Amino acid sequence: MNFLDLETELTAFVRSRSPTYLQEKLSAGCYVYGAGGYGRRILALLRARGVYCHGIIDRKFTGAGEIFEGLPAFAPEALPPAQVKGKCLVVGVHSHLAKLDTILAYGRSLPFGDVLWNADLPDALGAEADNFWLTARRFVIEHLSDFAETTSRLADDVSVRTLMELTRYRITGEPEQHPDFNLSEQYFPSGVLRLPKQISFVDGGAFDGDTFRYLRGKGVEIGDWAAFEPDPRNFGRLVDFAREVSSRPALFPCGLGDEFSQIRFASDGGTSSRIAASGDITIPSVALDDVLPKLNPDYIKLDIEGAEAAALRGMARAIGRARPHFAVSVYHRPDDLWTLPRLLRELAPYAKLYLRQHEANAFDTVLYGVPA
Image (cartoon, rainbow, N blue to C red; front, side, top):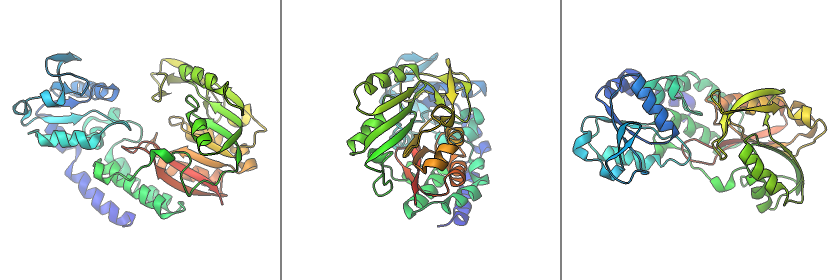
């Protein structure tokens, strides 16, 4: 199937679940599945739009009778089927850990009037429901030519198939249409990277040194290690880990960008730390070419919450000088799947590009650049 065929299929799907249709379904009232951060955001949006919410469902609740955000809270099995008849189930869960197939199967087993899941929510509730790559379906349809252009930049059939399946999944949200994924090969996929035995490694989004440990477990020796981690608690763990390694670490408690700046950051001491206008702290962000002007990296990994494009521009001199391998996350923003391949083609024309999926729900999509 090519993107012209895909456009016909997806446009028909979008018409079948239009914003008007979804809003009409919500007018009957709803239950929200999910009591985490995204679920609370969706609940606030529903209330702001005058949609009556009858209760919250989540496996963190032990039964019925609890109260959450002022509403009755239920474990899934404790919600009486007769109580939900004709109402909507709104799936307010959006992360790589969400078992969306299980949640949808649960919702469809009960007499709900409809189930609205992740792909529906920006259309039903507006741009405030956007999350990482998740955005209005019309945005995907309007940019199908950009998705198609990306296929011409990819080096193998697995990459092209992954991109087409991601495009379809962003419209439908149906778990069975999600591409296959392999977490165990993230940042070092078999048959793609051909790293030297010892590398100089730029680790953007270093967390607690997890990628360093993973590469070392694959037999890769790391000499110079430039690690950037702006979350204070994560950085503390990174420092503790770096004391144990025999490489030459240079640790930076800041983000990566194209110049020195101060940005708002939501810190949680875990993997959900992110750049956010409502963040609880301000962090410095620096350009690699400014802070390590003579570094010649062999491998650059960037998983930096949407700052990947700026970071790549801020290391243009190092890229041109060293011709490194890349692993760049392309799921934080809706347009990453075409803007980042374009940018890499400009900055690193020497590289073949490969796309791989490493987690569920279209999270941890990584674009690899490999010197030809």
